[in-house]
Amino acid sequence: MLLEGKVAVITGAGSGIGAAIARLFAAEGANVLLGDLTESGAALAAELVATGHAAAFQPVDVTDEAAVAALMEAAVNRFDRLDILVANAGIPERKSPIHELDLADWRHVIDVDLTGVAICNKFAAGAMLATGGGAIVNMASILAHVGQENSNAYSAAKAAVVNLTRSVALTYARQGIRANCVSPGYVDTSLLAKLPEATRQMMLLRQPIGRLARPEEIAEVVAFLASDRASIITGACINADGGYTAI
Ligand SMILES: NC(=O)c1ccc[n+]([C@@H]2O[C@H](COP(=O)([O-])OP(=O)(O)OC[C@H]3O[C@@H](n4cnc5c(N)ncnc54)[C@H](O)[C@@H]3O)[C@@H](O)[C@H]2O)c1
Image: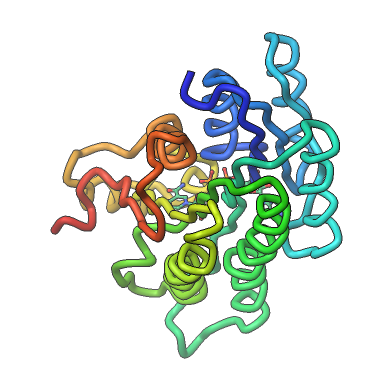
């Protein structure tokens, strides 16, 4: 199996892409510790345990240093090591023209989507150094690479995640830690379900493949990058977007 015996922490694992990653990682033989702000991750962890996988849930707010440190510690205490971090937790922004920017929303989105990723990388890298290395996969977005009208904090945070990932990759390149990111296009999750129907139709029109991605398709890319099969890949960002950024 692709991730046989690996120990993985996945943030935002309670729903959408994170839940698909947790399911695939468990199916590929990984021991998974699911972190999420909501208790939804607890039900998924219980389901995975009931089907014979090594899984657990711990609540975490990725913007809280102590909670993130405790999450990585819990993985090491429970499974003896940490091999993989998937920093997936993220939130959408309140879109607006920048002259109407809501600074409180800007700060919250930057806090979760950028600072939260940095905090997770900080404590995961510390734990991985102790056991000779590991793989970090950060969740970016197509909006890291292309502009979009009325997108502010989300685009800024995701673009910063891409370059943060490159720096993390270079910092630990000789210490066995690889760091990469994945940039999904439009994926059919609750994050998109909350949008108005007209916006969803506009998204479909912009998708070269004519459909939204499924969370499971993004999970496959994450699993590959997290696995030893991607041993030569570090500092990279894979666009998993149905051709969106190829235009
Ligand atoms: N859905 C898309 O089209 C799409 C496209 C590009 C990138 N992404 C990115 O993929 C990631 C997952 O998105 P999704 O579509 O699965 O969304 P989702 O809303 O279904 O899942 C996000 C999860 O993150 C959790 N979360 C939110 N804030 C948190 C915090 N402070 N600490 C811990 N957990 C927190 C939520 O509780 C939720 O379970 C996000 O980083 C998102 O920006 C999504």
